[in-house]
Length: 185
Length: 175
Image (cartoon, rainbow over the protein chains, first blue to last red):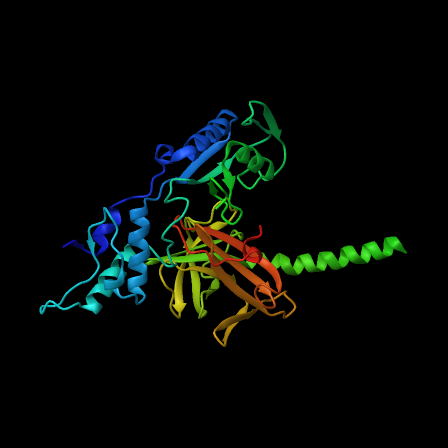
């Protein structure tokens, strides 16, 4: 018997902003790229690195139950001892109570749009960061040389900077200005 | 002759830019708890300037609001020159955490579940509204004509910091 769903779950499995929580080869790639950015004088402000898969699971299913999914059909997840199904005094599933608790949980997460169950963030292979600099940016490239970026914008949307990032294995996702990942997704 | 043609072309381009220039009348608003933030690249707006709030998710809806004073702006609008204000709803309803489009002046009506707007200085051209989700945020767009097939007049990205099911197309997300 797990712990009932509800807003108490929201503080568990928080999003990380630490480079130390990135996984695999992307961890090394991102660290080297950010070291190069900082050494070049750029400002780097990290919003998110690892979003735990458990957090994605809780956000995804709380949203879907609040929008009508049968809580008894939600698959279990190892390491998340949550009970989605509330029961009435007779011990029968109470759909309304289950939905109410899931909605409170989704509201506490500030969810207004359908959350994804998996992403590069849940794999530890993505980072959201704001990058900025002034003037020209002379930055070390992955091949040990350096390049000077004179073009605009002076932020993560700069195409030349994105080429430098790609050299390190940190690929820009075009649709989301702060998002870089192992493969551009 | 070529110079005259070039001059005429530049004049036409300038007129078009002026029309699209009215996009400084458009901003982003988000309700959270008892407060509504409003960010727009338009400093010095008076209290109580009227703002039409468009909830661009399907089915779309409209609310009316007014500026109650300066504010910190909406936090998910990154790398923007927008100025922050606080809003108060005067008519209709808004929903927490839905990213809305806020329009100064102009008239907006609901037609078959979609909001249609005309704004002063936009030559009575019909404008439509759209929002969609990408990996971590919401893209808001205003179109002359129909969404995606019309001319995109305005675009904003709002970072939510959540993993989302993507619904955007390339037309939505182009810088």
